[in-house]
Every structure is written in C-alpha cells, then in structure tokens.
Length: 91
Length: 328
Image 1 (cartoon, rainbow over the protein chains, first blue to last red):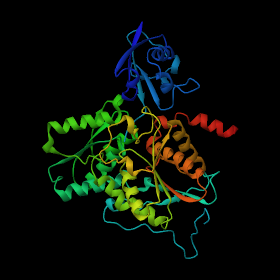
Image 2 (tube, rainbow over the protein chains, first blue to last red; image 1 turned 180 degrees about the vertical axis):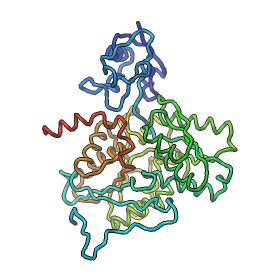
Image 3 (spheres, chains in turn blue, green; image 1 turned 60 degrees about the vertical axis):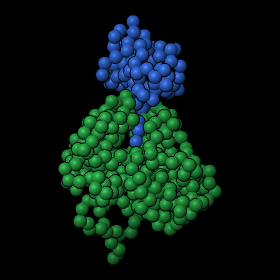
Image 4 (cartoon, rainbow over the protein chains, first blue to last red; image 1 turned 90 degrees about the horizontal axis):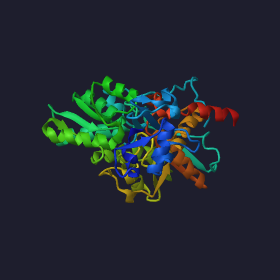
C-alpha cells in the first residue's frame, strides 16, 4: 500500500525532479524511512539527529498538519496525500 | 554608556521628528550596540545591529519599496491608472502596499500560500490584493506566477521587480550605507547582512567600500536549499537576482535554520529584542565573525522585528530551548 508524497522544489534534487513520488508505510515515520530508501538524503533534510521533524518542516496528511495529529506516528492509508512543506523559503 | 537612559533634570528624551507623511519615517533607523549576547568576543570588538523593524512598515523593505516606486514615478513607468504588482514572500509586499496606499496606487501581490497569517492580514489591512502561489515552490513559484500574470496583461501593471531593479540596492547606497557610516563615525570594519534579493548588502556594501575599501562585506545565506529562513535565499539553488554580484562580497557565511532560530530566542532573553528569523541568521554569522577578531567594529542589520512570526514554525522549538536554559 502506498501514499502519494508531494515534494517541495528544494528537495526535488533527491527525487530526480519529481514533484510527487509514492512511498509505503502505515505511519508518517514509515513513509519517511521508505522515502530515504528510494531517495537517499531526504530523511536528514526532514528530520534532525534525534529523529524528530525539523522545526521548519511541516508535514501534512490530506491537508492536516501532523503536529496537530500524532506527529511522526500519524497513521497513513493507501492513497493518502502526504505533503512536505518548508515553513517558507525565499526573499 | 549606561544601559539606562537619563531623563529629567532638564534632559528630555530624544524627540521624534514631525513629518508630513508616513513615508518620511522610512530609514534613519537606530543602531543598537549588543553588549550581553557578545560573551566570548574580544573586548576590543564592538558589535552593533541596525534595527530595521523601526521602519513604519516594520522592515528594511520599506527603503527599497519607496525608492523603486519613486523611480517608477520619475521615469513614467508608474502613472495614474496603473496597478503596482510584484512577487514577494511578505515584507516587500507589506512595504509596497504601504507606499502604494499613501500615494494612491492599487497594489497586487503574489505570495507563497505558506507565509505567516500575520503578513497576509497586514497586507490586507493596507488594502492590497493578494494572489497566492504554491507553497511547495517557495518564492521562485511566486516569481513565476507573477511573470505569467504580467505576460497576459502587461499594460495594466507597474512591476517594481525587486530582484532586478537597481533602485533596490540604490536605496541602500543612498540611505543604509551612509547611516551605518555616520552612526559608527566611520569606524565600521565589517558589515554582515543576509541575502534575499541582495539589495541591502549590494547597496550598503558598495557605499561602505567607496568610503573605505578595507571594510569587509559579508553575506549570510541559508546552509541548504531546503531551509526555514523566511526572507533569505540559498543562491546556488535559486533564481539568481539580477542585482546580485557575488564578486562584490568578501565572504559568505552559511547558517543553519535551527541555529538561526536559537539566535532569535537568545536575542529575546539576553538583549530584550524580539526579531524575525533572518535577524537570527544575521546575528549567528555576526557572532562568528566577531569571535574571530581581535579588534574591530562589526555592524549587522536585523531586517525586522518578530511579532509577525509568532504563529510560525520559528517558535516550534521554543519550549525545548527554554528547558535547556533552565537546566544550563
């Protein structure tokens, strides 16, 4: 089972330019691990050394911010849309 | 000088000027000496920050917006019947909305949908129209959408184009540079500032170099393409602004988002100053420069205050920082 993961522009260099990739896993944490397997380098951009989502990174599952759900343990179902959005970038 | 100002006994507090419009309040911002957060810096090194949050629109961008619009009026590119449009991640939008409204011109702004709610409301308060671009594409997405709107109806609009308009750095050449020079009595040895459009560092740097070519001009940029430093650009992975000339910089210092956020928390605690994340990044790099020196006068620029960011990710790590401080 896999979810659709939307990748922000600054991270597309890890996905060969793809705006959307699929990843499998029952939680956001498992999705992040699967992303790392297929696109090495993504996890350390998204999570800090302690494994927590970096402060400036927002992850949404079907539009809902996981900080208001169950963080990395937020469940993900097949077909869900997971978006990775930096707090902001640019001038 | 004492930390406390002296009032009374015939000494009045400094009087603000009386002015005919809010636009006259742009620039002439105070220069604050940082004396507590500079622990570990040589006693012969002085560190100052220019507080751009004192501009009426709340940020350094007031200077560039005013100069670009004034230049548009002078050249005739902006004339009655036209609308001012630009892409911006926030502060320039606020500044354009402010200047446009005072001069009676409508303003439309293309902004990534993930800018802070405070910014959206401030822009709306000045009566400007907001067009949202994709939050996944950052400011480059806003730049592209704005170009598309202009391509469809170019005759309707005046686009200040902060990334390519030489009036942007010129504003800093004419105001920020001379202010830093005069506020330090010409003693400035290092000028440290973040790069977004690069207008601040290009214009201020050019002025200071002309006064004294030994002054080091040091740019601060995010350490990675994927960052959370609103207002700053990672040049290697961005649409490079036309006004940016890297050869005019002496050095670039990369700053991590998390270090910059922690610097913001420290400024509140130690200096009584609540600023935005780009100021945190500027402070982190400034302290790095200051610690390397035996003597000198290091000046940085804090682009804005922090009240616009209270709802943003900047404060996500605050509780943990607070705990670390308590047990330190």
